[in-house]
Image 1 (spheres, one colour):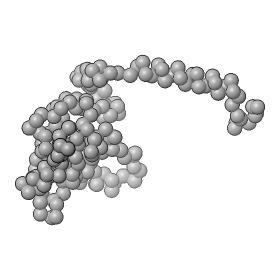
Image 2 (cartoon, one colour; image 1 turned 135 degrees about the vertical axis):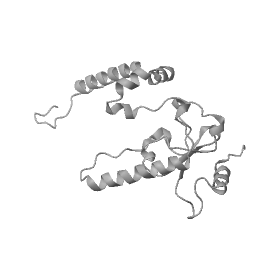
Image 3 (cartoon, one colour; image 1 turned 30 degrees about the vertical axis):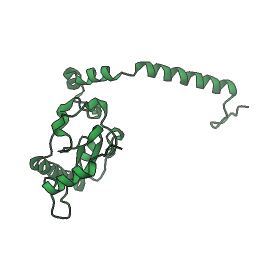
Image 4 (cartoon, rainbow, N blue to C red; image 1 turned 90 degrees about the vertical axis):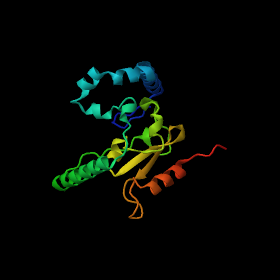
Length: 183
């Protein structure tokens, strides 16, 4: 049943043994998973974050708590534009390109806000907030968190070349758009 070359078929015993080892590995991995309270406690520890500051994994850790919610202001929008300009200059200088970041699945538009961020303060609901997802931070977008902590994402460019994200008319239109009628 087994061949001598590198593309040999597995015997029934080898397949059973491989499956058994894989099951044991999955069981050990499930035992090492952290619960929500443990994860919050670990990520909230400033000592752990300081130790991870110089590693690449620090950028993968989500921010903890409600202090991550910041209103979108003209100053923050200008800062985003400066960051975009700096990235474009770097792109022009660099020939080799690293792996670009990918959108976080938990922060997709239309999904509820992950539990790690906790509930946003009530005064920040239905208002323009700075982007939470690192992928979209490099683009000119903002989020609005609606009823049920649902994430809505909008472009921060002027709409119809007239309405900035801070325009009362655009703000009113966004509130109408994200309003959910109870059925």
